[in-house]
Length: 497
Image 1: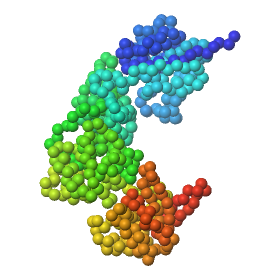
Image 2: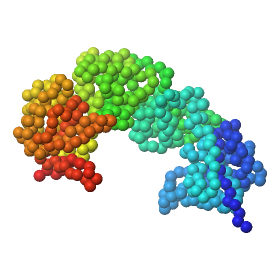
Image 3: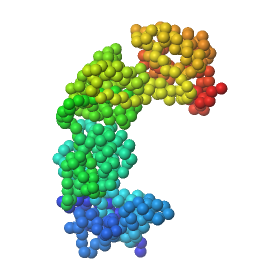
């Protein structure tokens, strides 16, 4: 007679309080023949203690004892190899019960598929046996409940990260989010604390230890002694909606490069500066590219021709204790707002206002990547705008770059009020370059209207160039190739000769 295979349950028990067990979890435990749970070598199991009130004397108990709790092992496969062997052996023990027709309930603290040990059984058994996963209250929800503060609201983004990540990675992720929960503290606590400080979020951070368990502790993370932090603790950055900006004697100005087209091009550090700012200041077009980062932030948009006034406004806000992010397209140090801010900040009245500059992807780099690699060798970057320097200077620099056989990135080629520069630059370059020199015409790179074409110097039509266009004029070595799929790529060899 063939025995029907048993059924596997992954049972979420919640964070620790037996009263937070769901009815479905209680029912699954009651109906199981075998109760399985993980434990350390000491044999005690938190999962079993949560479910203890629902266990029967006739339950078969399978204690899955971890072979090691630290990463030091003589196993030939190292720590990971030792654990993989353990999970295989544990899954085989449970499979034997299932093959005998027994129902197996694997107990899991919190939720079975959220940083839980059950998932290793699930991956090895669920494709072979009928399986039901019963969700449980996660430690994230438990921590928020114990703090009594909203975790995230409206369009806020919640990030959940393990404290075992490298410090740089933690800082980047924490800087660029609204709300966060950092799991697995314990020995990682000092690293997590430093990462929060680097991200500018340490003052916001809360601490929750053993939520809904004996020995529960909550408070501000800055008040916690690192020597007292257990594994069952989390750091929480709660919602900042309705939070009042802190009162400061002195603020700061951060000039932020957003890249050529907004959110997808932001670095984590830049996103963090924007998230943490009280006020965003910038050219309206660039401000519109910045996603809604935090309710309550104030935005001050202005025209593109008032850079000095914008910088002065930002610095004055900082003197009054506000954290100000000055938004700049591309990289703020390349024909953009960084210089304008630093020029004004050099005045004596702003000597005590901290100013820093965060880089962004430049328009030239973005255009070059879209075209291939035309900037693969030495190149020059020249703005064709004669609003701040005379055309004679521009022409002299064009001649010098062309004579040196440099690839040339041409910024600000034209606008409604400047229509002659592209034609003048083309004619000048034709005196020194082959008419067949490749020219990349890149418009709105990264935006919805992106267009990247490769022409020659002699066929470049100034009428097709506007302020949203960037030109890359090749050197004598720049090549244009067509791939089998029809893609045209432009590149400049790394070797010159």
